[in-house]
Length: 220
Ligand code: DX5
Ligand code: ZN
Image 1 (spheres, protein in one colour):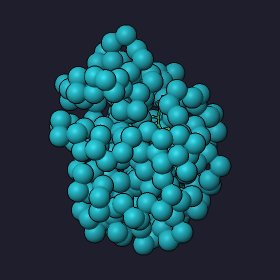
Image 2 (image 1 turned 120 degrees about the vertical axis):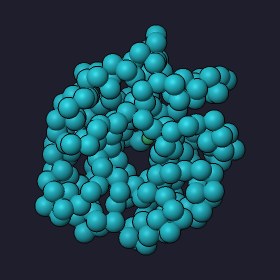
Image 3 (image 1 turned 135 degrees about the vertical axis):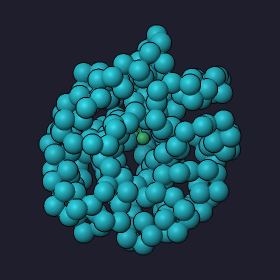
């Protein structure tokens, strides 16, 4: 059994104290940095862009998991590789030629992820599952932190897990949005491997302790 991972979402960090928050994640039991890039077109919000990611990567000592919520992600694959991304996740809904995009991400030496919106059926990924290192199931509508978790997510995780097993694939399942200590265990039991947590970590009194508690909850 592979260990289950926690990826704090930097979107919920204090941007005026970014280095402090990055060091907190470095020193904590967190596994990855989850970085949300939004373009104001694919989603109704703009987060931050390349210069900020470059500086995050300079200080981060763990895997950098970049979640692109942008149209036409193919234009920026090389840029994100050069900036230090280890995993690059594009949205299914933003890719006309998903298979080609996945190959292009891997050609740049990164792991390839596909994120799906709450309305997108997991079965649409069956024909590319062998090419996908990570599926990010959105458990909120992308664009903002701090939203509440959509309950139908459990059902999607179970269905996707079946697809992965049926095809003998190694794809990881990541859950993004509204993750807390209340749903973490149930998500892992349904088949999730990686939990992204933004507000729940950064808005807590002691983020390091909150990460430790989440890790404890998801231990299998
Ligand atoms: C939402 C982003 C998430 C977000 C999660 O569009 O993709 O990664 O930061 O934040 P919380 O955990 O606050 O829902
Ligand atoms: Zn995200």
